[in-house]
Length: 397
Image 1 (cartoon, rainbow, N blue to C red):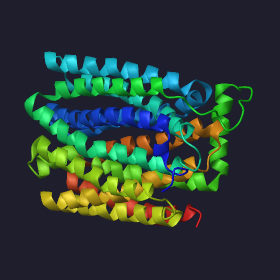
Image 2: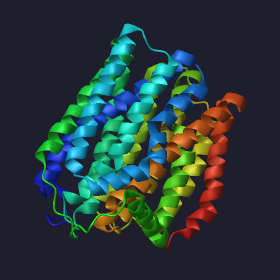
Image 3: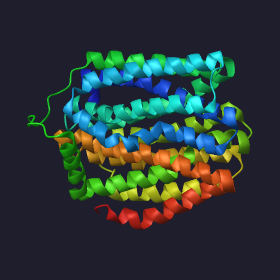
């Protein structure tokens, strides 16, 4: 790969990637600790699903509004502000946990607060990367960012397991709070490329939101890719939010087993990121359709097995197939969208991807509460497969 297509030749991108990598490790430490703590407090699949939902639900409710704001205001300043407030929220969560003032309702409240902050940052984050590199470098930049995300998914849970075992979940929350400082410093140092089109006079925020929705609706490629993101998030990643219950209730492995399973997902996703970073010509709509169908089948297998070592292989494979859907849809969207609506379109992707995970985790958690975890996960896999077959045909060939 030459410098013209490698994002690593951009100093701004390298600085951003370093800060994002630090922050992402903290994020996965937090997610593992949060899921485990919810299970530890309640031993209820329903509450685990509720807590998981709070991390992503704000992206559904407020995502389009966040997208409008990402297009209207300085993305650097917005990122610095959001990450600074995240530092404070995580330190409060860690302090209340260490003092013993935590119950499931307070945990849900603070998790929801962090979900709002992460939902606000999602379109900002996805809009910053295209403004750091050239159009030719964009697929490589998204792939490298994905590798960073999934490397943290491998390393972060391992660190989380060690921290929880030695110092408790309160320390894990504080570590995540400190990690946000890395992103604040990195974003403060970078300089964004100017927009490819001059700013036009601003409309009312509601009018801009409607314009963004109309843009998505009229673009068949983006509309179809968002459908893939929805199916893979609701039925694929929603089922994976039940891993804390699998780790303790099915495999009797506790936080160590949870860390291994979560890391395995990241390991599979890293393979996809590496493949895309070397060239994305193979990443087509057909590839994404196949990944979606395979994801549904793998979720069925995950729900049907009781062997921990087989489960590691299954969730690693899910890391591959779900990343083909997630990274692939994001790359194809970002390379097709106009810059003046990038924040809004990114917010729709985030709303569907993260909100779908929230909805899926809540649905699977509720179903598991009434009918058992494994039956609920098998049902999610079956629905993913059934819906993906006709739904994926809406993608352009």
